[in-house]
Length: 146
Image (tube, rainbow, N blue to C red; front, side, top):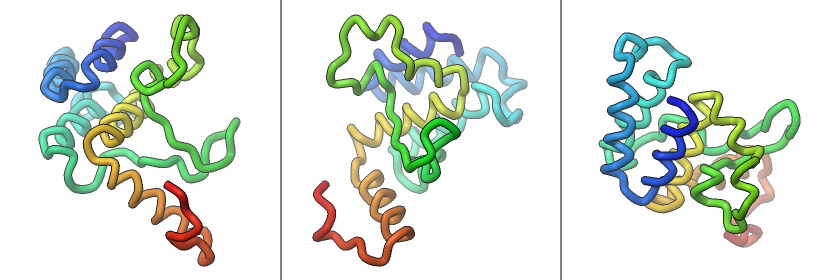
């Protein structure tokens, strides 16, 4: 997928049927790449399967990056910047977050999280609580304000 195709997916964020069509188009561009891990088609198929299950079952991508990355070594949550940024303005023309879209897994993880925020936020809450309890025995529901 190229940047324009990714932006088309963002534009359809509230239309799961439209997203399914765009993912199908991506898969059909190079069906031979479907089995090759790391390709757009491989991850599009994973996302399409999850969408077709109505976002039930285990999400295909991690919801939280528990250890962060090289620059930000702490737990992180990402969703599609152009879809979910509350203060977006002219900065969409040079948004740093869009750089992650070079990597198919990062784009689809963000797409998954954006869809979960809209359609099944309980999955995010469960993942957050599971992560917090894994790191601290002192965390309780009373200490969290979700």
